[in-house]
Length: 406
Image (cartoon, rainbow, N blue to C red; front, top):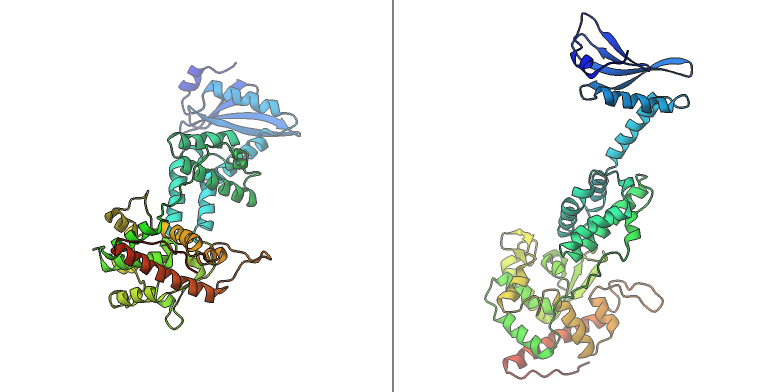
């Protein structure tokens, strides 16, 4: 006679374990401590076996009967016990291969060589935008529409650039999963063109000689700290990336040849770079040496010589002088030099691009090495510094003339 829910509930422990049959091989095992277990007795390949269906009251009578029916559907071709173990193993594997765990593994393997800011930005993106909706999902189960829904959520809050970076980061995680055998394909590849077009904003830069002269005069009149003032003064002379300038070290200077040799690990392209130092640049560096020469960095942080100048140091100084982000940025000195060296001073574009540490190639397609055209670049950097002196002088006299020099 089948069991009833009331009979199951009222079953009391006895001196020894006992069974209450429900039919079809299913029974309730009541132990001496009062625990109640659902069991299914069946035969497979001529052998009698027992399958655990759950624990009462977590699994009710009706739920146990449903599990009994599911198990019997597998017979006689599949052993329900093996199927159960395979399901558990699959669930465990899926949990171990969740998007969050795989992404964390990818991050730990691939981010150590990146900059602090890049690592921080990437982890923040994973933690805030990708982990909440996708973190617990098996990475192999995530579909293109599911990923797009997550990216749309970022896009809809107006963060177009972040949505594109989330797409790129997710793609790197999926490709890592494919390479490590944890997924079969990268669903982000199907989403190319699905997001709104991101309109890239170029770094604001002054490219008119007259306005550049005014900026140089304003820099000389800046009343901030000597370190920030020196960093400001040398920025237009060297036109390197702001991070490269902030991390400039005394040991990287070759005083005899007037060169700054930047190691590969500090460069965006991960190639060593040489910056010829004009007489004007040398004068600025010598002047600051009395203040920072005993430390590591030429432009150290105000918080201590063990750190470089803050990434907002030069930017904030420009703001103080009245130059906002739409007018001039620290990175903008590169565009300033690129434009005027080409259009006004008429230097060869390949010399300019090489000095900007861009990926310049020769006519045969080979990348130039760091010493390529160094004499010509040295001459260019000195003429550039002399030209800036002329702009400064003419701005002070109220008469800037944009000449074309060679």
